[in-house]
Image 1: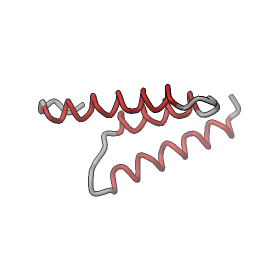
Image 2 (image 1 turned 60 degrees about the horizontal axis):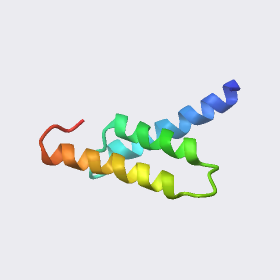
Image 3 (image 1 turned 90 degrees about the horizontal axis):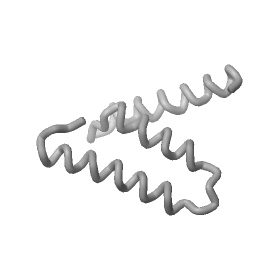
Length: 72
């Protein structure tokens, strides 16, 4: 992986983290990173259903952890 590509990836992830922190609802940095990496892994898939299902599963786990009072 080229250094330029790594810098763009870092900038994209840093931007997503900043937006997540600044919003009215705070999303944990690890959740933002997991969602980012998931989307990156599936970005060229012609069938987006696997990506959507994985995102839904991650978000449901996060919501469940909030409901249980064990936010990750």
